[in-house]
Image (cartoon, rainbow, N blue to C red; front, side, top):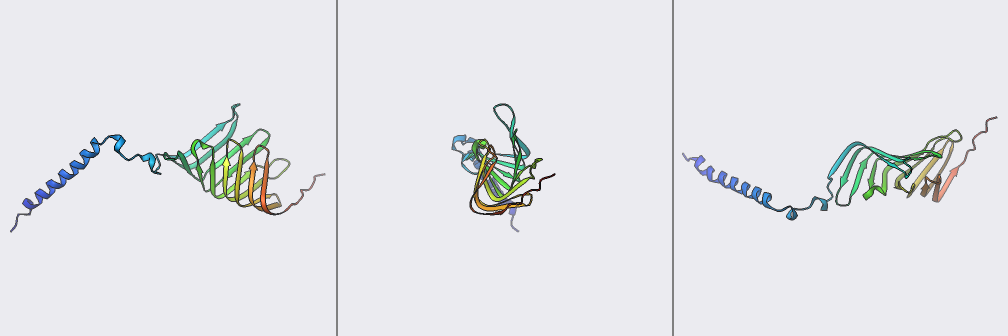
Length: 193
C-alpha cells in the first residue's frame, strides 16, 4: 500500500507557499500601483431612504429630493437613484412634484435625468385642479428651475387634456411649452354663481 500522506504533503506545502507569495506581493505593492477604483464605474457609496434639500440664497426651501436607494460612482461623480421624488417650491405658486422609476444625477447635482414613467404634478389651487403631465424621460436642471424632454408628453388638468412631442418646462414662470404634434381638448370650468 502506498503512503498518500507522504505524497500530498509536498503539494499542500507548495500551495501554502504560493498563497503566501500572492498575499505578500499584494501587501507590499504600493497603493499607486494598485488599480484605482475611481477608474471603474463601481459604486463607492450607497444610501438608503435618503433626502436632499436645497435652499435658495434667502434660506427658503427650493427643492427636496428623496428616494429609497442611491448609489454614487466616483469615476464620473454621478449618482443613480431608484424611485426618486423631486418636489420644487416657489412662494407664489403651488409645489411641483416629479416622480420616476429611475434617475441619474450628474456631478454636483446640476442635472437630473429622470426615466421610466416620469410624472409631473402641479398641485391644485382654489382656482384650478391639479395639472398632471407624463413622459418617458425628463432632463431637469433643479437650480435653474427648468426641465425638457424630446419624448411624447401627455398633460391633463381636470377634463382638459393635451398631447405632443417634446416639451420645455419653466417652473419659475409656471410655463409648460409643447414643441410639436400638439393636439388637445379644452373644457372650460363652470363659473359658480
